[in-house]
Each structure stands twice: as structure tokens, then as C-alpha cells.
Image 1: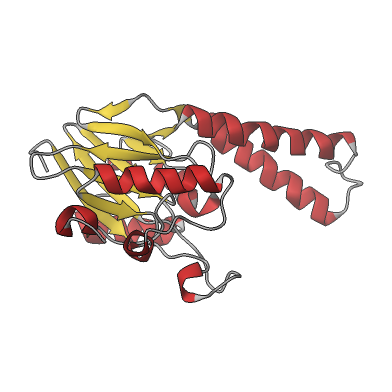
Image 2 (image 1 turned 90 degrees about the vertical axis):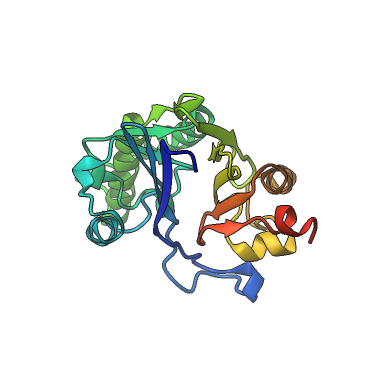
Amino acid sequence: MPAMNEVTVISIGATSYNELWGERQPVRTGHATTTLIRAGEALILVDPGLPPTALAARLHERTGLKPNAISHVFLTCFKIDTRRGLELFDGAEWLLSTLERETVGLPLASDLKRLAEAGQLGDDADEESRDIGRRLQHDIALLQKCRPAPDSLAPGVDLFPLPGVTAGMTGLLIPSSRGDLLICGDAIPTAGHVERGQAPVRCQNPEAARESLREAIEIADFLIPGRDNLMLNPVRRFGGL
């Protein structure tokens, strides 16, 4: 990496189920891989997927930093697995792609409005409905605090759209004289997906997901999958799979 950009994997994620292992239903708690980018004065944390207490401990173990040192948090998408520890970084600027923010926000607002119109948010509503309403209100509040991300978060840290799993899923491309690194989010969940050339099966747009996988493999020398560790791109390394 160039001197101004240092990339550190803070926590290696896990899938709730791994389709490559024949799993079809959740068998564990999923959480995204969390990565720290040091770019000049910016300390950018990507996808804080662990619960706050665990993530604070892991951040300190890997970097010696405390949560209040983080200047920016970037979410590759708005799924719970990428943002479970988000509120730990309340003093940072939260960023999300414009498309992801818009496509997530409308359904959340519609669901909350539907509950309100059905009278399922007040004291007379059943506990399950009130719980759903509280979760929706919480998610909307988080989303409102997420600002639309600019095309470049810092010099040499650029947005790289990877639609398919969600409409607005977006990675980060970090060019370097040693090779370009792409933080993929769930567009590429694991090293196994790269090695098999297989896009995630469960996604909003399967064709877009396959195209995002192809683009990621074509452009990057190093990959950080959404649920795995930093890896060399085998296509770049060996000239093909």
C-alpha cells in the first residue's frame, strides 16, 4: 500500500450459513469482516459487524486504538451483519452509498407507516408489533445518520459499486504501486466464492451479482471478502482459475 494508506483487517467475519458447504439455513450468527483504513488523517472503519463490546476489544487488540479515534465508518450495505457495532462510533461520520441509502430507506419508512396506520405502534398494540415498530424506528434513525458517501472517502480510497446482493452494495478500491486492493463486502463473501467463480446465490439481482464478481476479480490484485480474510486474487496471481 502507499505510505498514506494502510489497511488492517480488524475482525474476520462469518456467514450465517455457507452455501458452498451445502448449508441452506442459518446455523451461526453472521457478522461482516471489519477493516480499518488509515488514509492521511482519516481513520476509516469498514463494516463494524461485531457487537460493540467485542468490536472495541478487537480494535484495540489489532491497532491499539479506541473507538473515539475512528473518524469515519463506511458500510458496504445496510444489513445488520455489517452494522451491529455501528453505535460504538457515535463520534465518527457514518457513510453509505447514496443508492443503498435510498433503496433501504423507502421500505423501512413504508413498513413503519403501515404499522402506524394499522394502529400497531401504540399502547394497545400487541408486544410483537411494538417490538417490530421499535426496531424499524431504530433502523430509520441509524440510516438517517448515515450520510451519502462521496466518490472518494480520502485520497486513494474510492467507491466501487458492486450491486447484486443489494441494489446499492458498494466496495472500496485502494490503488497502490504494489497492487490494487478491493474491499468487497458481501459481493464476494469468502475466498471460496472467488476460487469457484461463484456469486452469492441469495441476492436481489443474481445477474448483477455475477457481473460484480467478475468485475471485482478483473480489477483487483488483493481482495478482502465480506466474510473472510485478505487474500491474493488467484486470477491475477496465476493467470486464471
